[in-house]
Length: 245
Image (cartoon, rainbow, N blue to C red; front, top):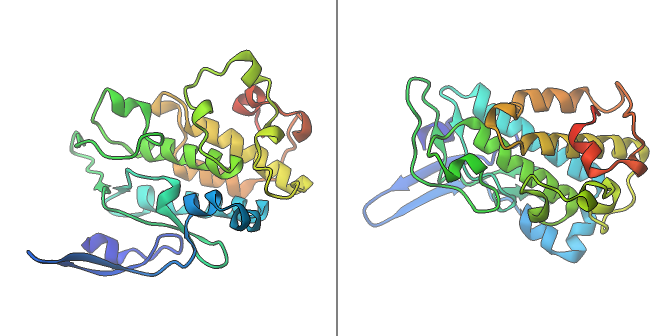
C-alpha cells in the first residue's frame, strides 16, 4: 500500500491513502466517473462513443501503465488481475489501471511462488500448472483485454490457441466491434498492429511473449514506418498472428 501511494503515473488510478484497522479497512482512490471498460463495452449506447481513436489511445496508455509497473517501479510490481473490469475510464474515455488488491512485488532473489489470484478468462495458461508469477502473466492478461477492446466483447473463442481453418481464414475486419464507425486508413494500420500484438501477448509460452516495454516501443514507432504487406480489408486472423505490421 505504501508503494502504491507513491505511484505517479498518469494511467494508474491515483491512490491517496488507506486505513487498516481491526474494525475498518478501506482505500482512498481518485473517483473515475465512467466506470469500467467492461461496463462501457456492455452498454450499447456508450460503447458507440468509444471510437477507434479512443480505443487505440486507451490500449497505448494501458501498455505504458503496465510498463511502468514492470520496469520503472523499484521493486517491480505485477498486477495479477489485468482485465476490463479493472480498467476505469473518465468522462473523456481516458483509461486508468485500478484494483491492486492482488498485486505482488516481484522479488529478483525469490522463487516468486504465489497463492492463486486472477480472473478466469484472463489468466495466463501457465498458472494452471505452476504458481510461479512473472510479469508475463500480466502480458497475457492484457492480450485478452486488447482483443476485447477491438472486438467489443470477450474473445473467449480465440483463446485456446488452436483456431480451426475456418477461424484462421476469418478477416480481422469482421471481428471488429461493429458499433464503432468504419476505421480510417490510419486507424486500420493501428488496429492491425494491435491485433498482431495481442496475439503475441497470448503466446502459450511466457518466454515467447514480448515485454511491455517492447510492446510500447512498437506502438509508439507505429503506424506508418512500414506498411503491412497485406491490405487491412484482406487481413486474416492467421496472417495477423504472424505478419510484421
